[in-house]
Amino acid sequence: FIMFASTGFKDSIKNIEETKVFTCSLATEKLFDKMNYSSSSTKYGQDEFELSGLTPKDGYFVNAPYVSESPSALECELWKVIDLPGSDRSNLSGSYVVFGHVKGIYIDDVVSFIALFHRWILCCTLHLYL
Image 1 (cartoon, rainbow, N blue to C red):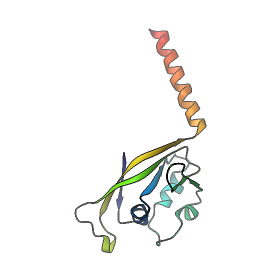
Image 2 (spheres, rainbow, N blue to C red):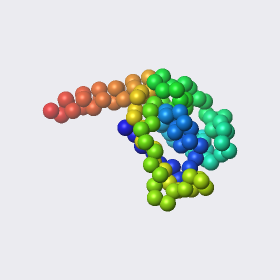
Image 3 (tube, helix red, strand yellow):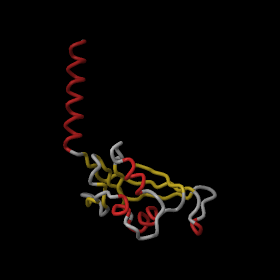
Image 4 (cartoon, rainbow, N blue to C red):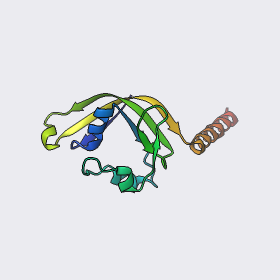
């Protein structure tokens, strides 16, 4: 399972509740500004991918896009949204927590190779010291 929180009732939560699916893309330092911009409050129906200059890619396991430029993404099905005390959906205020069941994990091949290479180096180094 995975969770994220939102201050203010944003379109993302509304969309997740309607579709029952969502993705979480890794925000690298290179993507930080664009991904942060994509989470700003906008008019309902505004395409955050288009607004931020990021590219959507269809999920493999859920019917929701993830950020194509991201080296890693989680594809999730909604489990529950909790409105924290003091939240008021009618004026879009408050804090909300979204929980999802991870159905698929995307990791770019380059990232996978680097992780395996580092693990191999670590194993070789540990072996030398044993």
